[in-house]
Image (cartoon, rainbow, N blue to C red):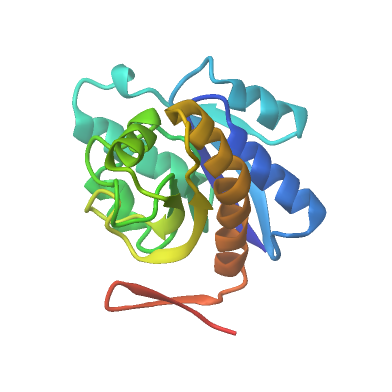
Length: 208
């Protein structure tokens, strides 16, 4: 059974999707053992508490230098014996220390079909605003491993979602969450926990 540590900053809807997936048996051979928040007021912490999941808070502002924060977060994750780290709306940048300590063991969910509408500056509603401004007919979500290139790690699963006439960024965001993010993130986590993903030349291969 692999230890899953989830990093959060806000409401925790993706965390809730993971909790529900674990309870229903969608996530196999994995257990959420800790939730770490960059924000002490994040509602995600309440979601964790309601499900008896231990929590921690680590704020970037409590460290004078980024390298100090980076080392502290790495040490915290190691102390939790994290086999897999999941970014579920974590709004603080991960540094070299964390990423190098957990190669191909950090999964992020991005609300677009990478390589579209991704990279530095593309987060939250900005992603959906850019998609609508471009006039795309399909958007979606991507579950991917994290490396030191923003949104540049190996893609694990993608799911497309129709963009409809009259969509606002908020409406599109909600549809992509419901139809894609909350489905493929648990699937990617389960595949990892079952040792069904291997990475070759920065490409994630799903094994039967």
